[in-house]
Image (cartoon, rainbow, N blue to C red; front, side, top):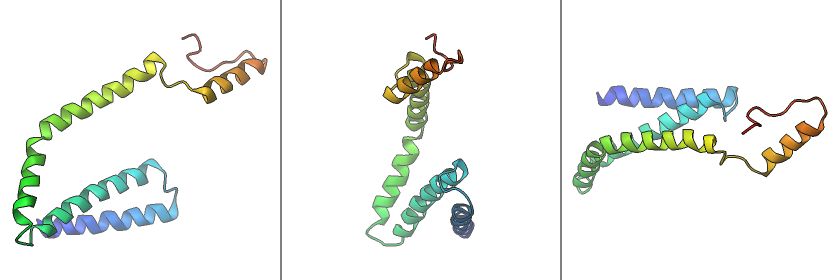
Length: 119
């Protein structure tokens, strides 16, 4: 199992390097590969630290804490998702740039405005 995770780590790292060198590093695909690679790097580091005898209890404790907090983390991310959905409904995402662009669109005279202007 360890060998497979090492190979997955290497493949994801090289794929990340290839995608960033050939395309836009800020694309969604590159960002997801970077996020997945960082999570795998943390896991690999914990597994490598387990080799050192003085770190073994700490690493074991951290792995058990992450396992115990899994239900809470899922609930927390669901709450964050709902909050992210609700805030734009209340119009809390409008700022000065949005209002300036909306005023320019209204003054252009073509009768068009941004979607949701009636709110």
